[in-house]
Image 1 (cartoon, helix red, strand yellow):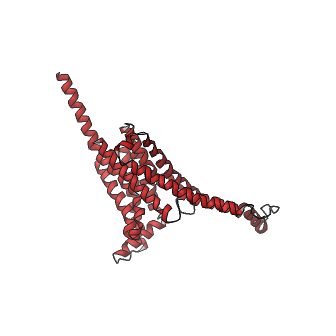
Image 2: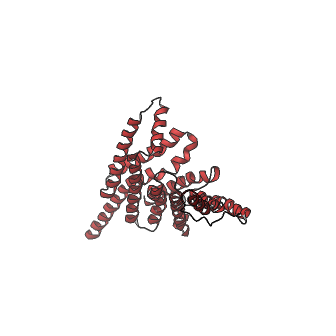
Image 3: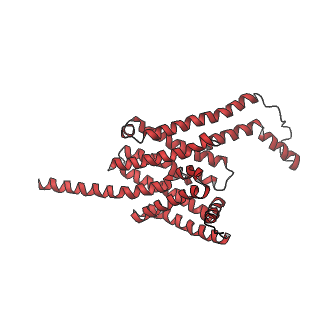
Length: 303
């Protein structure tokens, strides 16, 4: 049974990695690559000098002595920017390879299990890059909002080193962070959430009003935050089941609303429902293990 639960988590990791890799291979790259590109381009256009010169001209506050000079080795710097995306694709290939190997028992039990650290760090770095890049509402909360993504490989690692209790607590904490942030975003009427509801209603020929959208999001926000608190306080199968269903529903709403091509939006969010599902399935295993231990003790006493 323990191997079965490990395999479930491994499948979730593989699906999540596939979803994250689509943007790297077929779109505009990962959050880390885009952050590095943005930083390099700002350096190439001498943003600090331009900003200081503009402040000096408009407000008399900047350093007017700074001059805008030609960028040395501009071609080499552009090549380094292009190199970010080449490295990005190599990292994505490693991500898929390692997550695929985790689907098989022997690699999971070998030293390759530490590849899970690579996967976790990769997802965490994407969240950090998104936070540093900014430009989107609530991007400063990306690390906590994506805790289920980068926490999922750590859960499997805990299972592989026989830290059952630690893996359970880690799962509950990671999913609590994700639900709490999403709940806060819903209460704050995050614009992408509003667009998602509007488009979803449009698929059924219903034009939902802004007041109705606000009411739905406030309800969802209260529910998400309530679940985030409940999963830390109680170990109730009902809470795990509710979170699993809601996590999968919200993840599936992306391709349902945006089209089949948005399957990666579901895949990368699969941990939002996958972790509560694992917690739900893992509970009977723990109860069975406890019963088996009690039976063995009773047999030993009789002998």
